[in-house]
Amino acid sequence: MRSPDDRQPVPRGGSSFAELAQRFAERVAAVRPCVDAQYVRPDWVQRNAELERDLLPVPPVDFLRHPSIAFQMFVNERLLPHELPYVRARLTDESLLAEPSVGGPPTVPLPGTDLRTSSNTVHQLFHLLRYEEATGRRIDDAATIVEWGGGFGALMRLIVARHGGEPTCVIFDTPIFSAVQWLYLCAVFGEERIVLHDTAPVRPIRGRVNLVPIGLAGATEVDADLFISNWALNESMPKAKQDVVDRRWFGADSLLLAMHAEDPFTEAVRAAGARALPVGDFLPGQQYLVT
Image (cartoon, rainbow, N blue to C red; front, side, top):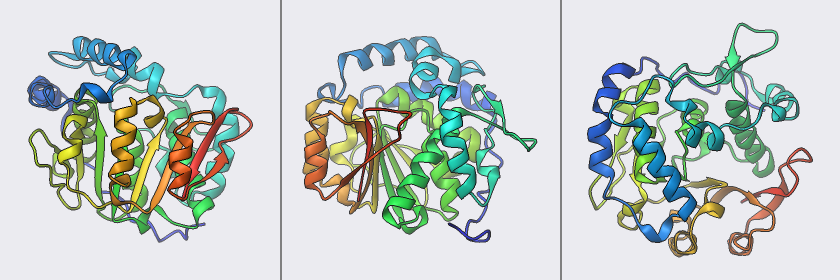
């Protein structure tokens, strides 16, 4: 367990959502060509198209409630009774559970406090804490962190906050989700912390969160300490999985993956030295693979 003084607060003061939303369309246009069709399953092609159609030209203030985000990126509140006690027992700073208002996410009261959290934030912290407990590593041991499939940026927000330093972070995702991550994370942290790449080669900016559309993954020069992919690789096409393996997890020697226990890709992850852990009885058939 961490001591109370081992995590420094992340500076707040994100950019104005209204101003960022006005520039969202130009950001989408810049990254739209940066896609590899061999990486994306047909169902996600459809979801991405629906999301882009509904968020352009200016995303609504409650964009996190769009079905392609709310139904895919926010877990059901039925997980809270299973995950929240574990998380609260291991956090020394419960302010990490506070949910930013950006995007109008669904929230619930955090019992015994004035904070509001979300089942999604609890779920993401549960992943990080399980990883730390299982491996004996801490998130802030990693100077460079790569995430494959970052959703709207929820996990990376928590990684940066829990890390406490200025890690170099890279998120690979479809172009529209890279743009959504830009919108969300800039609104939370400020634009100075976030870089949205749209040209090759990609050289991640040190100490920043680098958002990389998947069409530029092969042209990204990064040597990671930690590679994370929670239910994203098992929803990627075989070409994407093979390229990640061929890149040797972008150099990372530590892995945190969550996926369906029956996914054949498990063997490739085990071959990298990972061991499997059940997520919990409350999520049967789901596992972590960690090194």
